[in-house]
Length: 160
Image (cartoon, rainbow, N blue to C red; front, top):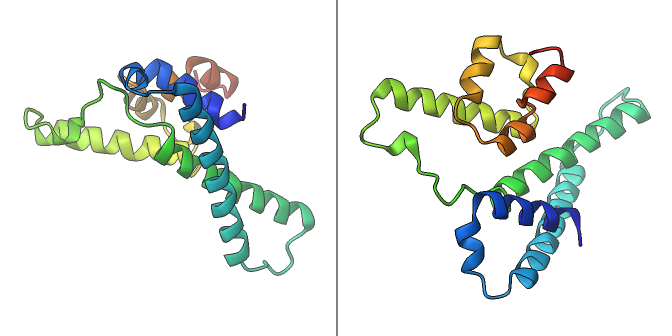
């Protein structure tokens, strides 16, 4: 069982239980999904490595670090697309006609910055305490863990 299959099963059990019941053979589904994710991450990472030009004066460790970040970025993108799908009961609040413009803007701000955190383009320390509270508002525990906004993660970083 690869790591992506385990992650998908865990996420879907917690956030998409209704969808799992619709799958004829969950074991086969998650095995195939895990393999697909692994293959897609590898393909995207390889394409990015090939397209990335060498950086003049870059040390071995700097290059290794840059390539690892490329892999993490590819992995985060694929996970968002194939595994970390919205919960069964999620609705797109930004499209809710009952929201005011201010509420819709707040939801769009939150969604944008949570994606930035998931992608690794920002970290919780980039935000002030008030903005971290805005980001955490109503977010499921798993999302807080993945973005580094859980109580435990914030304590480790000295942000809570």
